[in-house]
Amino acid sequence: MKLISKRLCPYCERVEIGIRIREISTQQIQKIFPDEGIFPTEITRINPQKTFPTLLMDDEKDGFAESLVILQYIDTLHSTGRKIYGDDAFEKAKVLFSLETNIQKINQKIATAVFSFGDENKITEAINSAKEAFSLLENILEQRKTSFLGGDNLNAEDIYFIPFLLKYYSMCLIDTRFPIPSNSSKCHNYLFSVINHQAIKGYLPTFEEMSSHILRHNEKKRKLNSNEKLTKVKLYKWPHQYDATESLVKSEMEKFGFTVYDLQTIPGWFNRDAHSHDYDEIRGAVSGCTTFHFDDLIITIEPGDIIVIPAHTIHKVITHNSRPFIGFKGNTKGKRSVTEHGND
Ligand SMILES: N[C@@H](CCC(=O)N[C@@H](CS)C(=O)NCC(=O)O)C(=O)O
Image 1: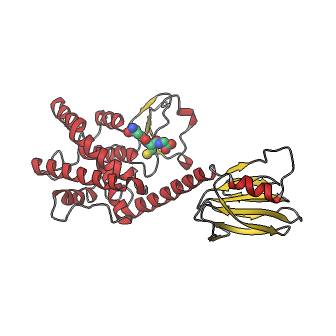
Image 2 (image 1 turned 120 degrees about the vertical axis):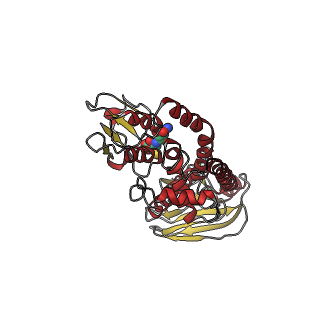
Image 3 (image 1 turned 90 degrees about the vertical axis):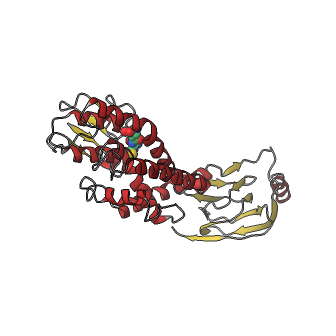
């Protein structure tokens, strides 16, 4: 069989841990990491959700997905390792019962903290969620008095949330506002036993690898958000059937509620490096043409055009012709301030 996986994916890590505990050989299940983490189109018929992990049968014509379903399936395979859902139907039912109730709840809370990382609007919710998860986990460990949730070894209950727990701890290396259970807590001992377990140590990515992945992921998210801002750059074309003049452009701009403070002439072939302002900026063209270059958007303005650029939007201004450009500048504050961003 083939397990279609993705690096640093907590759902794939669940299956990875399961495979190690069950001692499933690479002949039985071979792990495949498609290039660039792109889901292979030839198997979308098998898993239209296109999620990792997906398990492909030997003939590669059939298969299924969902980490928890795959975990249950590998528990039925013939192999030397311990079962992860227990040895009989009663044990399995108890594990499933615990998963459906306590464990799912703990995982949801840890996952909330992990997935909201980097979003300042969600920081309080994320911190509270983590605290609640640790208090639930502490209670269960206290009641069961075992090293792991099902006894002396990892079972499906631990596997369910360990990948998320490890991601949480790697996040704490980056942002110290997130709570970590105290050294004397059961949660702390639990984590220590988990990271030293033979199915985990050396197999899952290290905290450092995970935290640098989280940082890269956040950087992508931040860029996406700033692109969203770019789509908010607005261009208003001259609405009249007579030519724009200095005073007409100024009064048109003032209709937007901006203070227009500067009539500027820039020479032909002008080239202004990347910069941004901490206020929404308005520009109105009186004569000539110039061009605003945003990360993924280029806008040329001609006489009468008005452009509104949201605060913190990085842009360059380039005149792609030899003629001077005359235009007004304004903002809601009435005074200018600028942040340079060089050529990056
Ligand atoms: N409920 C699914 C969730 C799987 C999932 O969301 N995987 C993520 C990767 S961590 C995914 O495939 N995302 C789409 C993608 O990466 O293209 C499971 O337990 O397997």
